[in-house]
Amino acid sequence: MQNKQRILLVEDEAAIRQGLIDVFIYHGYEVDFAVDGGEGLQKALTGKFDLILLDVMLPTLDGFSICNQIREKNREQAIIMLTAKSSEDDIIEGLTLGADDYIAKPFSVTQLLLRIQAVLRRTSTQLASNQQITLADNVLIDCQNMAATTSNGTLTFTRREMDILLYLDAHSQRPVSRDELLNKVWGYADDIELETRTVDIHIAKLRRKLEPDSSHPRYLVTVRGAGYRLMTATA
Ligand code: CA
Image (cartoon, rainbow, N blue to C red; front, side, top):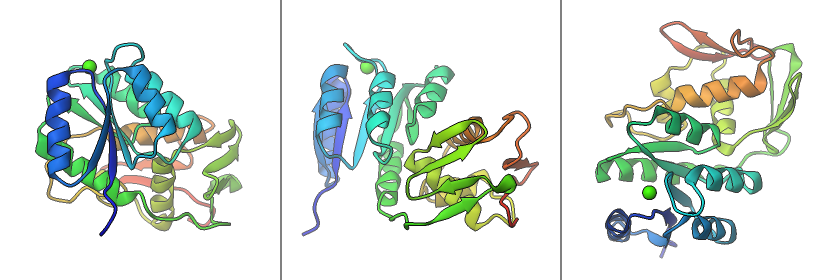
């Protein structure tokens, strides 16, 4: 029998927490949970989870701090933030700190499950050693170490950022649309109704890391009406 996939749920509201635990168990996941931020961080750093679901507003330590501290130790860990729908800033901050995606409260359980399934499907491909992406200006990205040295200094990427760069590199002869990235990099089915800014925010973050001037991108350009294109040495 296949091992169950493990989810850590960090949520202080008992009703939401218990509701989600029931749903996850019903759908065949193994669930651990934490009721405040301190416990959440401790479990996140010491346990082994396929996915961590992080509420933002938590007693003792907020979800942003937890996300930040997980990322300092682990750039592969899949993380989804549960944010307040009203707060655009929350969404941007969560994704900037390295969450893979967010879902705004109040959310539908069906939407949440679709995203969880997509994130969990995506976390298994191996990065080959010696795999490199060469951007214009011969900026080299070391894929296995998820790092690059640019005029901004030495950078590291999360696994999700690396997957975006790898996908754009594999299709660098053309622009790639937002929907295509959601489908191929996040694994969301074409037909799920999804209103999300996660792609744009990830692209903005990659530009801040890679570009000498992120308001005039040279490597990760927007092709109006078509999507994003990675300008590689050979493109
Ligand atoms: Ca809360």
